[in-house]
Image 1 (cartoon, one colour):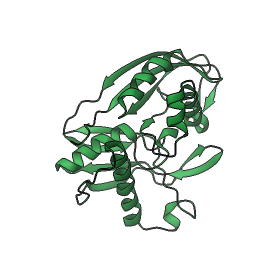
Image 2 (cartoon, helix red, strand yellow; image 1 turned 90 degrees about the horizontal axis):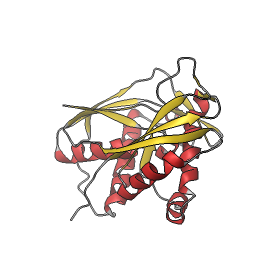
Image 3 (tube, one colour; image 1 turned 135 degrees about the vertical axis):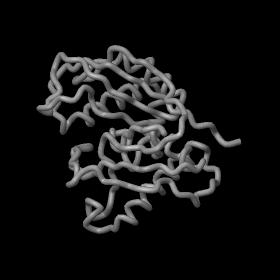
Image 4 (tube, one colour; image 1 turned 30 degrees about the vertical axis):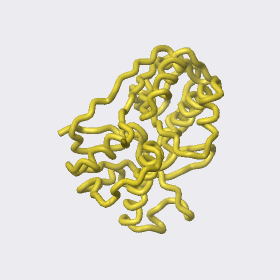
Amino acid sequence: MQKQITVFEIRLKVFLLKDIPLSKMLTAEAYFIDSVLTKDQEWLTYHETNQYKLYCMNGLFPLERDGIYKKEQIYTITIRTVEAELARYFAKELSNHSSNQMKGLIAERRIVPRKMISEIYTLTPVIQKWEQGYWKVQASVEEYERRIFENAIKKYKQFIGNEEIDEEFQLYTGITFLNRKPVPVECKGIRLLGDKLNLKITDNKQAQELAYFLTGVGIGEINSRGMGFCNYRWL
């Protein structure tokens, strides 16, 4: 029997201990979450294992127009995962956790309802790692799309236990790049270029299942660093 997909969402309020510029925001969030994983041996092993990390998060909210998130102000981070135990751990531990940049306050956990999805769109840039840097200098849109789909399938198969699944289906009927030029982001001291996407999801069963899954794990690579976090619109 195939593993059931459930997307869990944690809305975490944090108090900033320092100003954080937009360019450092996702790095600060990733460090905050990484450091809570290291407090427990089971989750430290999960963090250090070479596998897809099946969670993702968006940036601080509300947005700051000047690009500086302010010391002594309260913001919300939305974290999603398809791992039930990880969702429980995050909800319990992050509200009692601090880094040198932020302190957790309150965490609320809920399940994202399963409804017919018309589209998913990313709030943070989608990253693909190519040998020569940004994909547009070396690959076609068709190759880019193929890697988006293959990455999604690999994450899905990891979660369900590497069972064989039917991969011959159309995930979306249209893809739109929401940015006119590449979106720069910092990750582990490296400047990466990504894109924000909108995918019009097809109404077949496999596409709907995978789209729902992606709302919990993110699109593309390095989702646990905040990349490829996506929202959804229902029909």
